[in-house]
Image (spheres, rainbow, N blue to C red):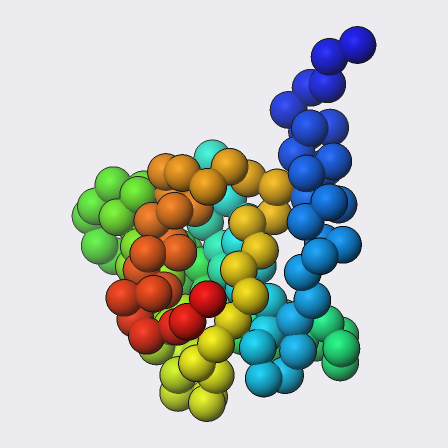
Amino acid sequence: MALNKQERRTKIKLKLRKKLKGSASAPRLNVYRSNAEIYAQLVDDKAGKTLLAVGSNDKSVASAKVTKIEKAKLVGKLVAEKALATGINEVVFDRNGFLYHGRIKSLAEGAREGGLKF
């Protein structure tokens, strides 16, 4: 029986989460994409804490009149900027079951341009 989109993404997500672990030195860069917005957060899995979170609904990103892919790139740069300000320069990228193209890829490229290593 064929899986629907949500079941497929859940299976992929569970497979990814078995392998990816974030720590204080290299937290997990978790990405969530909805139809209208995109969100990214840095998570320390060992301590069970979210270190910082950024979304496309932040004032600096939401005020820009650009496409969703360009907004995703701005979110990636903003995450990198905030992470570098807190002393984090290396992360583990968690695409959260989404395919690595479009807005997810754009966010990752923006984070890399901002100075994050993963």
